[in-house]
Amino acid sequence: MSEIERGILSTLIFFNIFQVPATKERILALLYQTKTNLSELNNNLNQLLNQGKIFKRGAYYALSQADLDRYEQKLTLVNKQWQKVFRFYWLLYLLPFVRQISIINSLALNNTNEKSDIDFFVITSPRRLYVARSIIIVILKLFGLYKTKYKVKDRFCFGFYVTKKHQDLSRVLIPGSDPLFAFWFASFLPLYGREDYLEFMKQNQWIYDYLPNFEPDSCFQKLKEPSFILKVIKKTLEIIFWLPAELLEPLARLVHIRHTFSLPENHWPTATTIAEKDILKLHALDPRKDFKAEFQNRLNT
Image (cartoon, rainbow, N blue to C red; front, top):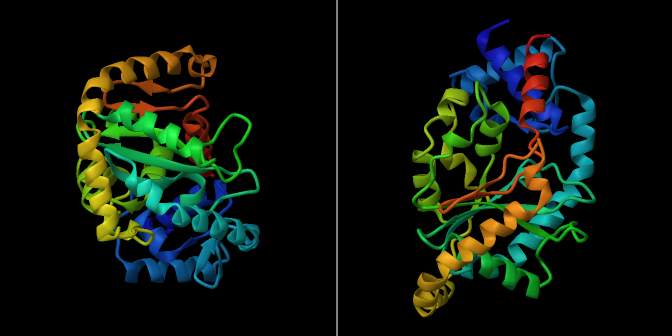
């Protein structure tokens, strides 16, 4: 088996664990620890198809026919959630002090189900993380969009924030290797803030140790340029709220951090929650160690 074939199978193992297929463009971008180009990838994909080791339907490849079948069933749910995201794009864009928002987790992987929420990753201005989070919670609750313990389906979940001063996520990686975090990181789908996203990626060069073909530009298929009016309104809101935010950020930070660690789930053995000045990562059930074990086991069989 060639190195590229092994890389393809490794990447498709990741997608198979989540029971979704992938296009050749996505396989190339997320090709695990293997450097190649599209032409070589095509040749090796065809070889694996001829050997019966992978399957193809339309533009999608998978390790099993079941993944291809399931994907067709999931498309309606996926499209419904994207419609909701773009219906409220204006609201997401107008959130003060938010520089960049990306879709992450299940929707970014086209892996939604009947109970899935919609997860977001947020980059805020410096010294504005907890004010921004407070605004997000209040506004989205007013619109009936914010995820709660009892209302999850199709609700908006904001569980990972960083500021422009803390964009290097290498400290979040688990010891040894962290394949799930790498695949997750490379699956971000930015909604707005193109330049902020590109700057964020430059601060995370560790990704190329896992995925050497990854190109941030490959993630812009859902990026939308806000209208001039939206830009003016957002700028105006940030000017109006600048002084209150400057004064309230220390208090908001104290309240949010204390509340975060008052919750018992953030002290579970599976928790990797971080709540600090420039990063908030809410993760009570972190699956990365289990994923790593399964992924390595599948690679070795």
